[in-house]
Image (cartoon, rainbow, N blue to C red; front, side, top):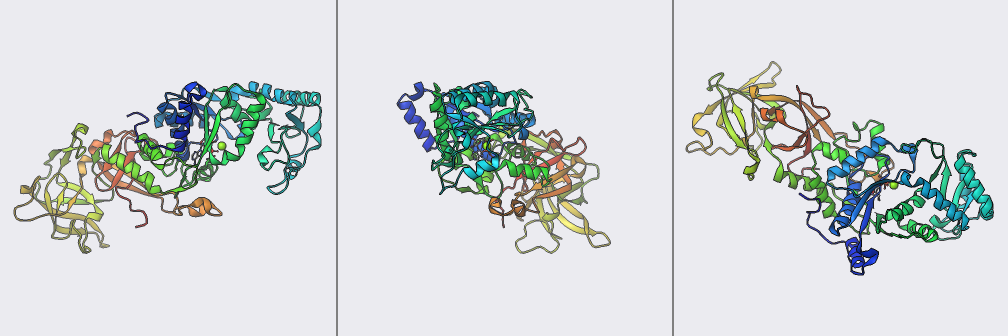
Length: 553
Ligand code: ATP
Ligand code: MG
């Protein structure tokens, strides 16, 4: 499957690009980029941006770069960079080039010198506190710094010495000289360089001055020959600065910045800062906890790249903020797995059943298709014997109305095998059910018994032909639909987002399961082997999603 095979719906960015191509703008080229800051793992919101940038490029025979926006070294790491590359590749995309903003540090510095020489930037000694006061507000213009009219020669000298490490962190900054009275606060002489003695994961200690995001981003885009610089809406007010920097520098390439609404997904969080807090405070087991909305968490939960790409296509691209229901994402994975997931039998909460009229030690095996509609997915052997497990839930001593499964004296069909009848219920001293004694009807293999209709069909595994497993039933991480709107988003956490079943039994064929396949455990949901916590003795299966949407019911 290619990365662009979802049904394509148009959106305003596709329109802009089509119009540009028709006008032969940018020599008919389309070049985009995905520019993450390596300060956390990618989440489902990033997937929207990734799909958008890579797909727009691919649709137009263009290119899409992966660029690490690594200008903030204290929060960034190689671990995050590696995770980002892994996740983009797993989603099915190939970057044309891989770059880092830090590749451009020398060029960015040279451009800053150019701005100073043009009288478009100055070195300021205002304290951060003073700068904040002088910035003004939405209703009040800002105040010019006393350093604003420093001579070009003095600015050049100070900036050179900033780079040379002659000053303390924070003693000076370099600011663009734009307009302290601009109604757009971003244009009130924004800082473009600051002094910061921090080790950079790629450039080491070569620099003690680091460029700011707004300054770096537009230049990085221009240096890579990006045609359409697609970003989220919060950068709309930064676009005048983006254009100002490139106009002043007269770069050969001047990309067009286009903003779209970021993904907001209910019952979760898409902010790296808050996701990091969930990890560092131990609310989840790590960035790839299967409850996390990270790409690595979704992968570990058993999501497929196809389902995530389908989701990103279905939610569309607009300029208006809106919330997407979690059910949209869950339905994408359900639909995909319904098509492709091999079926298997697993008993999550086992109840032992002894078949009293079956010869002890005798076994019988069946070939069961792995998928009801897909013969190409093959079949597997399932073994029947005198002792089996069924789900505790599939037996009721005092059944509610309409209960179609096993009851004392009642019959039920074992999936792919015989009809059994419950003859006796064995209990321990406390009255807990520990075993059922059942008889099987030898004339019911694959057909209904003469004259009786058995409605219920339940799954089962043979005691000695199944393996012990731990099953982790994940639910939504938050029980509040918009945890971001709470004073403290942690108050919205779902206390029941994980239920661990440590005595489950899965059919023997699952001994060969790999984490790259998500299975449908018949009647219970979709599950995927957890390659992090599984051991040869005890595999662990994560629930990807339930079979049907049962949230809140
Ligand atoms: P966060 O708020 O999670 O830290 P960010 O925007 O700071 O996100 P970046 O690493 O800078 O994270 O994001 C890389 C790209 O992904 C940017 O172009 C950004 O606009 C985009 N992006 C981030 N979050 C979303 C989202 N929720 N929906 C769509 N695009 C997003
Ligand atoms: Mg960012």
